[in-house]
Image (cartoon, rainbow, N blue to C red; front, side, top):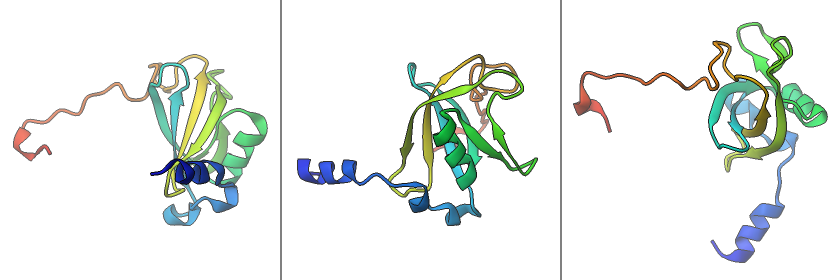
Length: 127
């Protein structure tokens, strides 16, 4: 990619209306990442309203698929995610929230939701 192509891409920032919510039944996967350490904290989903609330409030909002409701991360636990930056992938169908996490991100009390290693007995099937 040339410098001018990179500049054009960087200046072509999508808005909420440009996001591809229709690809996954009105929801986008959202990866929450610690802005300082780079640790992946969690994966959740957002509908347009959750993204709008996130941008307006400066705190991560998601759509709960199990409760079918909008929720602000940490609203009941106090483990809020303050938004530092919101990035959109190249297909505009996934978001990355870079956050300042207060307390653990996982509902189990772990710092991140990704603390379990997938075990396998058959390494021949691994890519």
